[in-house]
Image (cartoon, rainbow, N blue to C red; front, top):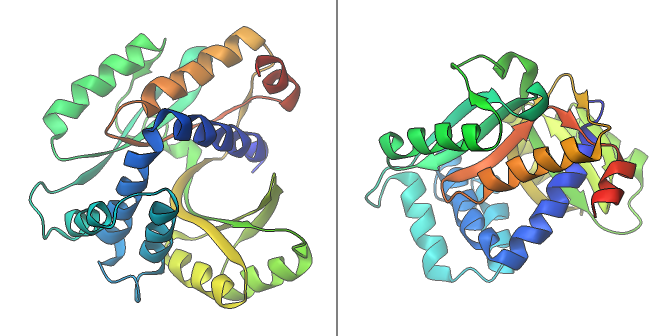
Length: 248
């Protein structure tokens, strides 16, 4: 997982920027839809959905919107939502995977192709970069005074694979099939489970030591994430902290 902490740092910075622009509102609803689609509409038996609902409420998403999101995810409401992964390459030849949630693939596909081109990359065939990513369940635990060793033991006992410290807390990875199991166990142990989601984690990373190249890549991520259908963007570039500091 070399370099992944820097990518996580970029994601947290992006989250803060998105909140200011109002983009986060729609993302929170789509998190609810995705969680309901994956594990059903009952938060009592779908811990991932419970976490998504809690985050949506914290983000001031109205209850009616949350309830509609759950129904969209379970198929009770019209407009079946489909999760699609688009693969390709960005500037500097980095691998890029874009996860979208759409009710119209025929509309979204050409828009994704256009975004790859406009950001200095190219869309590829299915599987062209997927080999370089592992599909993992990712849990963010936040809070002050957390004992890393105790958290590690609790996470491993619950079925997790790894733990990594990051700004403001810890990131725990596990097999997607046990994501809810691990998250719920940690919650029951008294830990603050901030987020739970399925991510594509790069196996190998490309270090970007040039400020101009780093800016192009961050601009690429921002262009994709500004699209209404985009749920997440994954790439294998790693920008060192000193380069990020220069950009900020």
